[in-house]
Length: 202
Image (cartoon, rainbow, N blue to C red; front, side, top):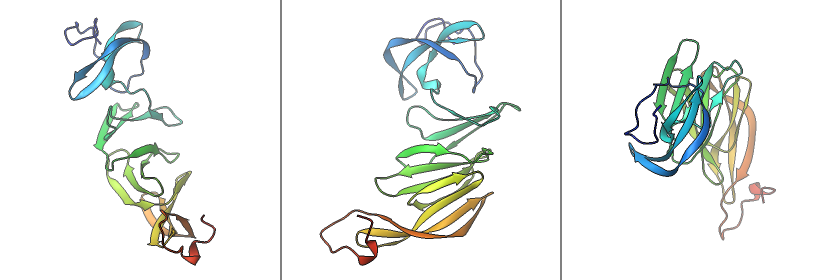
């Protein structure tokens, strides 16, 4: 935290990562620092006020029900996940794969994180263990949904003319197994005759 919105400003305090602050003002112009372009923000923390660079502030983060685990993506390109465990002050960061990340989702326990690398129809799903960044799943998907600690994934298995077929895969407690559901999903259309098995998709 500095007394002015620039690198020449006097350092007033150092704030620990994962600390919540209140933003009360912002600079008019952006500044380039460490390959980032962001404004400076005047913040309030512990009854103290000062300026912090926006590239080091997460304006959106995820928190578990016990509010002792915080997760946020790096600014500005969202290429890494940061995890902060408040109880033991443990900080974990790990890189993300993919190029069009649409969001993070978690089981109720916040043990894992699913990262959706979405395209216009199907996508690619990655699952990481949250406390060490280990990648546990890496595959295309045609839809997925967390229910408690169980993640149901529609995994594409066959591309047809006009649609695709998927089969259910279950991720639970770090393990992957086949589910019982199957179905079809949409696909790009061209001038070829639509496969009869795609009836009802369009």
